[in-house]
Length: 165
Image (tube, rainbow, N blue to C red; front, top):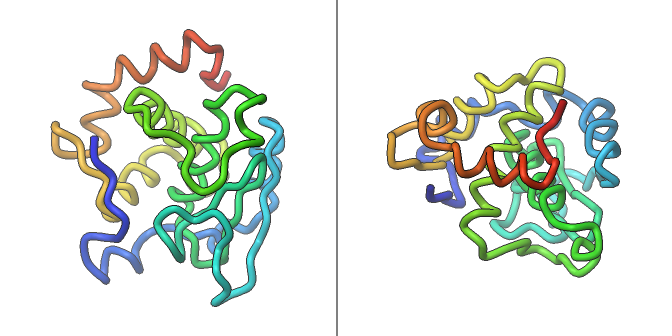
């Protein structure tokens, strides 16, 4: 799996679901179940802890930062990075959560599962947005990876008790 920092084309960027489309209440409640806090950053302002730069989400400790134009997939991905980390390691995170391929794959898998818990999002929409943004997998699409090639990611999450109920 390879993640790129920008959408494949400008038209793809405008097609993805953004935080403004779903509001902060449901995502904040979802992230709160994992001990995370969601913060809205003002339009046009720099997003603290953003690895890829604006409009991508940022992470610092147990805090996830977004703007209204932050893609939902980015918010869930960065939150997923914090969720897969042991609580004692979260406090040290600033911008870059891991260089582990296993953790990255688990994070991608988890963000798809978390999307099911957000009204108006769902896994199918999130996977389409991930493809539009430039996530790439050897089977050609996020859905193909999730359904046919993500057993290691699922097992990694299962072994740590991180699969949502």
